[in-house]
Amino acid sequence: MVAPAAAQDGKNAWALEPYARVELGIVLSQSEDRDDELIINGDGGYLRGNVGVEFGNDTTQFRVEADRIEVQRFDNATGRDNFNRDRLTASITQKLDDDWEVALRGRVYDDLVSVEATDTDETQVSAQVEYEPERAHRFRLRGTWRDREYDDGRGAGGTSTHGEGARADLGYRHRMGRYHYINFDLRAEEINSANPARSYTRESVDVSYTHPLNRDLRVRPALSLRQTRFDGRLTDEDGPRKDTQVVPELELLWWPSNWRIEAEAKYIVTNSNEPVRDREGYRFSLSIGYAF
Image (cartoon, rainbow, N blue to C red; front, side, top):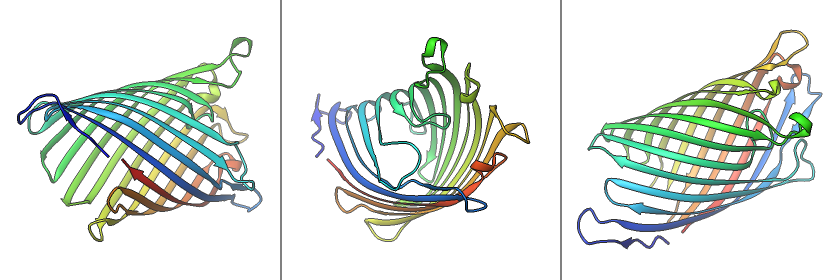
């Protein structure tokens, strides 16, 4: 439960609002190569929790949040073992006027599963500008700088290696009513590292449509397209590894009161010039959460 504590009386009073959420989920996924010879099973469950506090008024908001996820792989799963990830976030958001808003954010990750590695520590800083001339139209532009450390033993004397790079996000949301949206998101990112296997560039496009079925229930179809190039990972026949991934998905969200119940189905198609990465498959997930 959120318990605001006002710092002063009045319309623009400062208030302190703690919050928390806990979530339990299950994931069933499987992918196969084009010849059905290599089957990757990603079944597992997870427990996630976050806690934070907001302090602000009508124009200025400070936020600090801690988030942790524990992932348990099922016995039939292939690939990486059980893992956990921690994240700490601090941000400030400032409204400039009725249409414009700016935000600064810092984040620290421990044991992040990233595009290029399964055990990544990351520090990132970002700045965002938001323009919302009316409730029907919102534009966001965010720039992020990321510094990463990989626990791979590939550095000098068996130490960790490092990578760094920028990410740019541009988003537009068209609002047609309560929980009734169309979202368009573009992203470009890169990581450069002295370890060639960790360097990559990626461009992605995401489109989603959220439609309310009733006050608490809504459906969200979406489509994602990602193109990734690993210049330091050479294939046997066609130079650097290049992946193109298309992901149609359907999500159902049921939020009665403080409960957050969400089900998602994806079909992931990956075309790659590295045969072992050229595959397709499904991913189903169900989560039950509660927001305090």
